[in-house]
Image 1 (cartoon, rainbow, N blue to C red):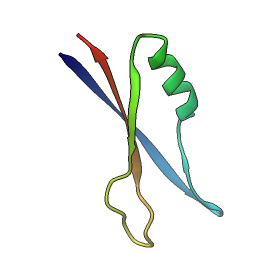
Image 2: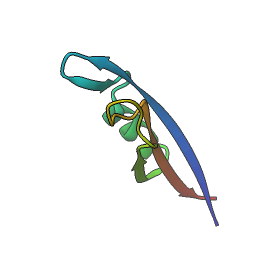
Image 3: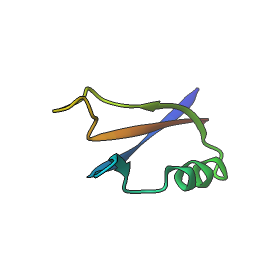
Length: 63
């Protein structure tokens, strides 16, 4: 049996596209140190000019 955790990373618009508001590398390392395994980075359906508003990091670990 596994449990799952979803972390939303918002993106901000800039001159060179959209950038994450959080350092997702840090988020991944922090969760890995607590036994979570990154399963997927999910980008939802796009808005406007084909850019997502956010993405989600999906983690799992054994219960």
